[in-house]
Image (cartoon, rainbow, N blue to C red; front, side, top):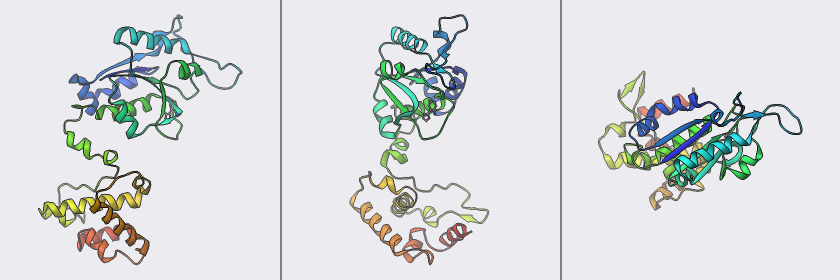
Length: 275
Ligand code: J9Q
């Protein structure tokens, strides 16, 4: 997959892409990423990329010419991209589903907007889509561009070594992950749920599915509206909802205790939550 990022902070974007899963995929040639300094496409000797807004008002607006020139140059050197994304707080919300779609596009260009604004003709005449990563104010579109590249790149075959871990990811199956533990089995008075040490793989699998469902119900019930569950998971969820509706205020019920693996660990968790 080819990705071109156009930014006024190429150093920030380059350094963020140097490490981690994406950095390794670039080094291995699985991703072909180029970062372009918007100022390289300015035509005046001051390399101007912004100007005052027509009609007045605070801040500066990114001029259209350097952005159009950058995409023209990318098209000449690398071919016509399948998508030109602009990052902006007023874009469509970026999601796992959008990332899955973008991961099938052979060549993607990402234009980093800035907080003060971008000339509207970039949106209407150059970008094919405008994406927001969430409702908060950032000083520029560089971090959103990096978020989009990271999420999309992970879905490109071969970028993440373990394909199974990609398929298992929270937003791939629509549920939050089950809790994970590693050694030591006991740490500062906190123990690992005994079922995970039991070696009973079917029990472990059941416990994990129940935990994933329980914490999704508790923390992100909105996710359950879109997920499609297998029959036994749907039954498990119904049981968890009934349990919840009966009220757990008197403490963990028998079923709740069983879910947590019984005994020490459940008591310890309950104590922790009540602190
Ligand atoms: C360019 N706040 O915010 C959330 N998603 C994108 C953005 C954003 C911003 C400022 C400039 C993008």
